[in-house]
View 1 (cartoon, rainbow, N blue to C red):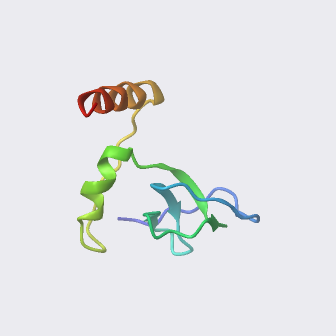
View 2: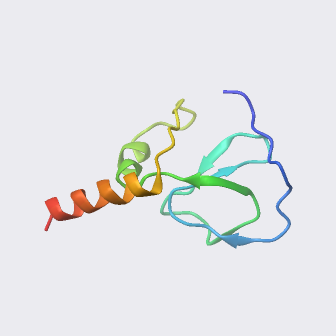
Length: 87
């Protein structure tokens, strides 16, 4: 899709969580997977919902994906159900 410009340039490094969605210098989203660096100076938009990371990992590079917001409450509720299922 079209490029995204960060609102403020990031000047300090910050910890990078698994699934973090960063904006590259070219304005494209980059998702931090298990081989990610521990620190990053790029802007971070949010994080991928943990159960979706496996499906995302199966996608080929440059495959178009869509992001949909989910509330923290809904994410926690769904994760609780998932973890209870696998107990």
